[in-house]
Length: 258
Image (cartoon, rainbow, N blue to C red; front, side):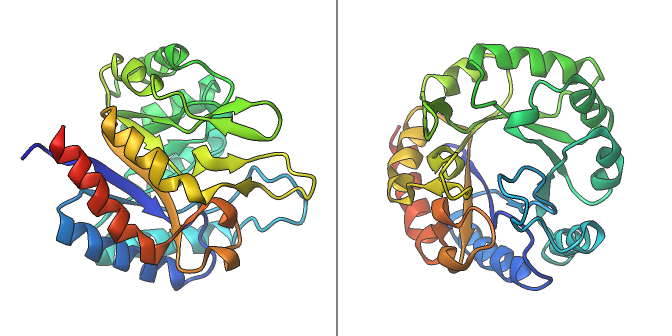
């Protein structure tokens, strides 16, 4: 049996001091049974929100300590996003993987600062960018001597209110020589709604995830929550936590059949 894909998963944001730990523990139980490597993800702060009054976080230090507790007590690799160069060194003390948000994937100073930490850097491909162009993000990070890099596909803007996934992006970005992740749930966002809150099409999570594994994605990124309807961020495109195990079992069958 070939080496399995890895999973990056967790809630969109640290909503409180307790629920992220319980979510991480549940995902870890599932992935341990299935033999899937797992990296826990939660944003410690949501810096990119449409509306002024959208939930942004419980406080940076408090949220980072929640993530660090998951890392220390469960023994997991953890990741969160960084938004500007002033955050990078601080956040790097708490996590194993620094995530560069899609909207910031061309920010040279941010990529260089993340690279200089020598942590693994996961760069999300901008919704506006071709997969071929991601080689330039790779070159910026490599210039710091850091070759711990991942690239993530998360959909391409299709008009004003939808995203599409070009599965060619995965093998194209793999030519850079690094693992490529498919961010399933963010690829199903429906941005720019009139309400100012991102919509989504979660009914296609399984469809997109199966296609990603079939074309050879090295990893799958899924935001999940026990009750997405009550999630404080991105609830409309998240996977209910109780559906995660069945989805991963399906993905393993596809992966092992290739």
